[in-house]
Length: 244
Image 1 (cartoon, rainbow, N blue to C red):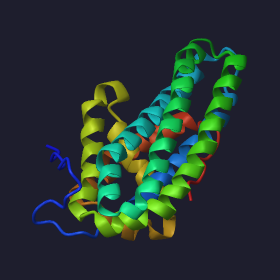
Image 2: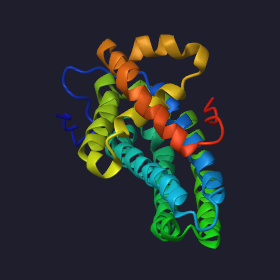
Image 3: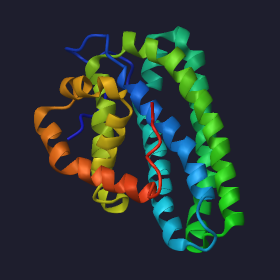
């Protein structure tokens, strides 16, 4: 069960400020990749090929869900604490809130287009859909960079490791709660994308340092096959584009 966070900006008893925020770089790398790749996948669907549109559309739905979840988790865990504990960061926190609202507005325009496009594979609808995702990507790229440069250093100084880790715990719990809607392979996709976000020459060391041995074994025996199958469905006639 995910531990409820304190409602105020006070440091929880028994915890100390200072945390490793480097995992957020990997998460941002995944989002840059997802939203870079999605528009061409939509544009490449042959007019009328609703079977292919359904495959791409499923991953579009997952991309949108993941972005909503990521921003909602940050809204819960970060902004009030950062503004309370480091008042000099308040302006940047306000910018983050505004950028999250802008991303949400993009998603509100985009998501209603998904089902009509999947149902028809209409190229005119597909182009409008892809163009709006391009606009979201451009907004998102600016936001992610600003968050890395202006928010992560403050968070690493004023949040405890337990508070930072809560975001990962909350993400896992949210994915598990919505597994029926997202698909039985959602955990494999989460793990596979995270591993793919690490440079290949660092990957083995990173996995040993960050993934418990039982999960590494489960990934090797089952989850990797599920992830590879999903990527073959998405990229049936070409290699999966590199993330890094």
